[in-house]
Amino acid sequence: MKKRGLVGTMWRSAARVAGIGFVLGTSLLASGLRAQSDYVRPNYGRFRPIRKDWESYDRHRIPATARPGILRQFEGIVDVFKAAPGLQEPLGGVDIEPNVAMFGRFGDFQVVPNRPLPAMMWMLVLPYSRNPAGNIVPSPSTAWTYAFYFVTNDLTALTGRPPVFEFPGDEPFYSETPLQFKSTSVPGVYTLRDKLQVLTKRNVPFFVPVTRERFLQGRLRKQDQIIKDMNGHPVAKQALADIQAALDALSPESRDAQAEVMCTDIDISTWLCKPGATRGEKLVVPNPDFFDRSLPREGFQLLALWREDNGGGRNSHRVGKDAWDTLDWKALLDLLR
Image (tube, rainbow, N blue to C red; front, side):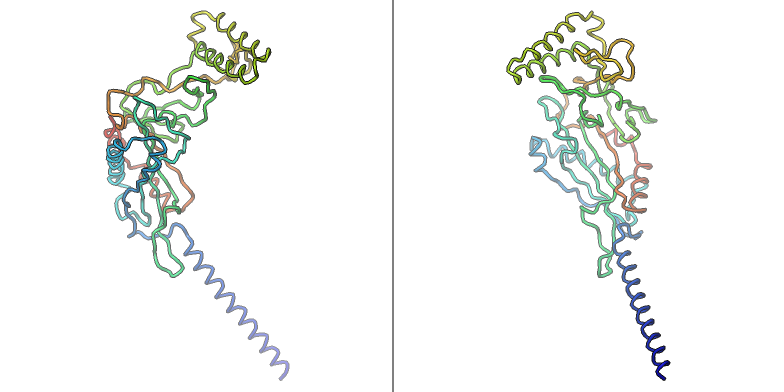
């Protein structure tokens, strides 16, 4: 009897442990389902109203009078997305929330007098999920799983890298290497680095070469600043004299040639590549004549857009891909001036 009692006790304990394990496993499974960021709900999903963060426009000195026009143009972009065959409501388990704001993803936007105003919008893909009570709920904006970004009228947004050189009194100098624009089947729509889509009706270069003369003039201004910082140190003054001598020695053809730096063999005094050197970086600047300054400053003349997958799961990735693949790029281009 004692043995049977012991065996019975062991069985009861085992059953109890198994029961606890089953309940715990079921609980964890349910918790996992609830925490899954891309819960499949085909009948859910809509475009949310545009959220507007005008305070960020204040920080970037965008005039209040320009904001209604900027908003209308972004609404037109959202309408093109809504018309995409891959984005018909219900969206299949996700919401899409447009945000008109400028949060400095590229640092300070260049708001320059007499030039078109830059502007920014992004659209967040927000999956539906289950809360702890088992109810299906939309995600907050912080739980985005996929996003589309839009930047207008800002050539520096296309560079993909920080400037190679910044000299006083001039535009930043960029490397030409990541700025190889590829034409698409739609005239005016370009692909950049297989990531960005760039749209414009302007038939002029996005960037122009930096000449050797311009580069050395920038170095002279920078060296003047260094001399002041070093209280007129003789070494700094000699460096200035070497740069000036190199500039004076350039032939007219060399002055107009494109500046190339960071190659296998450089001139120590000028930082420019020597003839025959390889693997250099050719320098460019945003084309100062790219934009038509006779048009209203808030009008979109350039649009760059790209997408970002935050690892949210199959619904978000599917919606993002369907939108990109079925988007009417010509309709987007028609929104530009």
